[in-house]
Length: 148
Image (cartoon, rainbow, N blue to C red; front, side, top):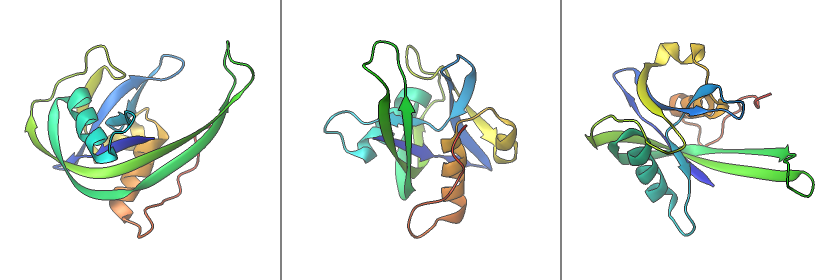
């Protein structure tokens, strides 16, 4: 389980950069995995601070995204059937200074024009989160095709 935040200000979205499995940098929504026993809201506040340097206030629950993949990994006894559940919040910046994470899962944080997002190399969750933010569906779910 993981929690992420959509932070939009002046028609710009806050994203973090992370290396894909092949090492190619891709833009991700700031956020990440929950610690054992941690509340998802606390997770997203902590992760935003770690990855971007910003303090945030969660202003709403946008929805959830779930995915399932089977991974074949060296050292494992066969494939691993993995299901992820990602909680997507809306948040606003309340303090802090933009900075990049050191020795973490991301290496850069930056604001991007909303209109430029389709041109970025990004993970599917960015599209899911923006669709949730724009459409605000009652059931908290949107369809975005899975990554190839």
